[in-house]
Length: 312
Image (spheres, helix red, strand yellow):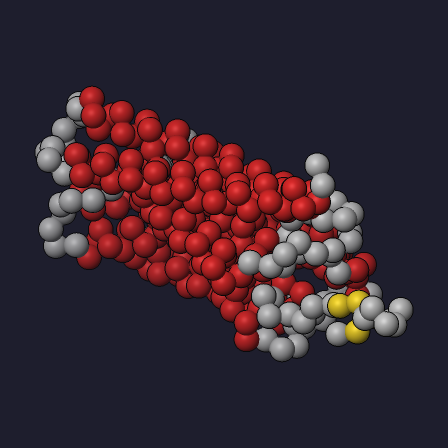
């Protein structure tokens, strides 16, 4: 296949993933609409509700597969072939992919069936924003990105981002259920507060060492290889460390001070806010970051047809 064919395949796979995510969301809505008609303590679900539940998971898995094809297509479309995170559009595709993938991975272990509509709606919205506002044609990587440490660094960072996002959704669900005066509708189908608090903790406990590996180990090694310095006080480096501090405080407070419930959920959401501000906000608002290659408004490097030199 030619590079253009790979890029076309990637674009078509993104569209297909978006469509199937939407169908999965509809299946979730059918499931939860049916559940509203049953008592909150009903154990046996109707055949239609059970089928909608299975269909929603199946459709989500198919969408994740199409999402993966889109990422592979972006990498194969470049010359030379590369990892699919050379700009903000590709970072967004990768980040949302891992949110959905980790949801499926933890679905049965943590009993996350209730989270399905939130995850699918989130990923679908992110894909729409990426396609409408962030899309860029495939281009070669900048020189700083040609490093095996980039692969290790970004993979670990997006895995942690997916886990923290799921943990943040759980913390938000905890706060909404806690504040609700009428335990009905969707909130009535959420796990109890103790279970939500425990699930949030486990998701954050999984993501934190992975984020530590990305921010404090592979990130500095890659920075030294690319810019001859382990730490440059780059805005992204600073905000990544701030995120690490917040989540470290969250886990430390739970382990030593016994912080649970509402206070822990609030700290977790603060951590999620710093995480996504670092992921998106720095690229828009910072003019000094060495990670500006990821920004959608970064200047393109063009070749002057009348001169062998590269011009900006």
